[in-house]
Image (cartoon, rainbow, N blue to C red; front, side):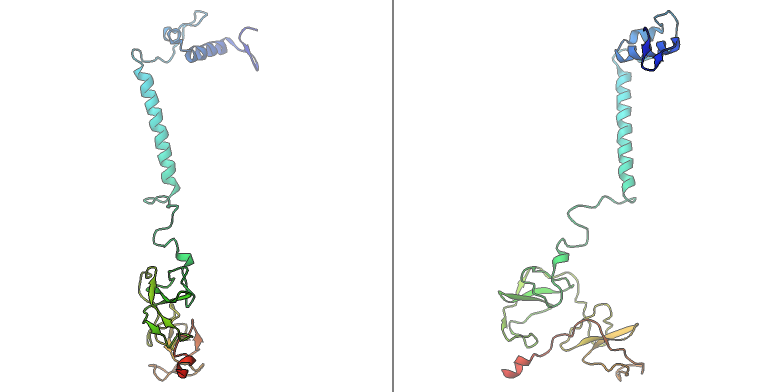
Length: 232
């Protein structure tokens, strides 16, 4: 029937609200501005600015500013204050190839980069290259074969200084030694250094104290003169 919709008939007040809404949606604002219902009853509508529609445009502008502010707040809340979202191409401070660089005495002729600070990938021949601090062209007495090294640098030297230790330096973190034949041996939880040998449970007469050494090996022994040298 008249004024009916889903949910049953509307009351006179509901009819007036429906008429107001229909008038607003159809742009028939002159009825609302007069404030007169179809039944002659006067009401007090919200007035719209007349003229060139400035009120509507200001309303749209304020709504847009509000949405932009909401988006900005959501973006700033997603990351810690003063920071920005991480870049997808990588993390600042780490090379994008850091996970694939060669460690220890592995062959670096494919990766052409070294995981250890201060190291450079040097070529021995087209089939083998190794990460080293320095390289001298020709046979290397500390290498396992007597083939000559070209010492061609492959890739870039890894940034930083060689972390490996010398005798008298604490090598607990680096777990490597610079000098041939040296191994990083542990004395206790507080000290380890590079030595040519170590007697477990015994003292080191070069120490300032007579405390015993565990002699646990930390890392690999630095290469020394190889057996092939004696045959030359």
